[in-house]
Image (tube, rainbow, N blue to C red; front, side):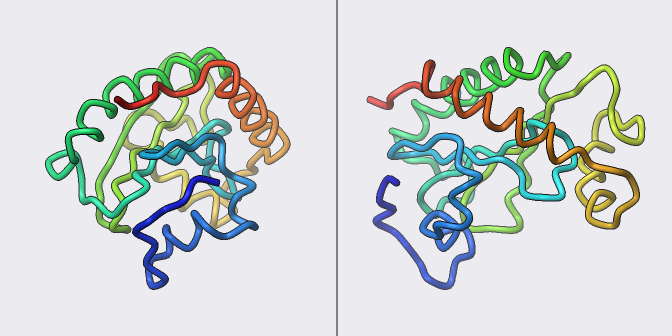
Length: 161
């Protein structure tokens, strides 16, 4: 694990970055970014989040290192996610309301989606999965996460300068 010098024990994300149980969802991390799989129930296999290691509201508040790294990091992560999943595209969204850590959701859009979701309705799947409105395939989610973990070891996110 890479140290988070700005750890705030009142922050859920900071605690998850240090919590060994939550670390099972970690797919990659470096000095700026933390990539983790969406927790169970997993709405869509391959749903991941790119999270800043420090408290920062969003790109407008990124420091120079985060600014230079964000585009190449997100692009590389999504290329690897496309290769691993065979998805048609990757949906990306970042609202920034639930945590002091900027985080971008990357959701594979497959030819067949739960509840035939497309576009913004994909983000309703998180609630629907938790409510048991459809059957999630945690075995497939674990397989995709393991494949993404391995792929990011072979082709890691770009190193910031």
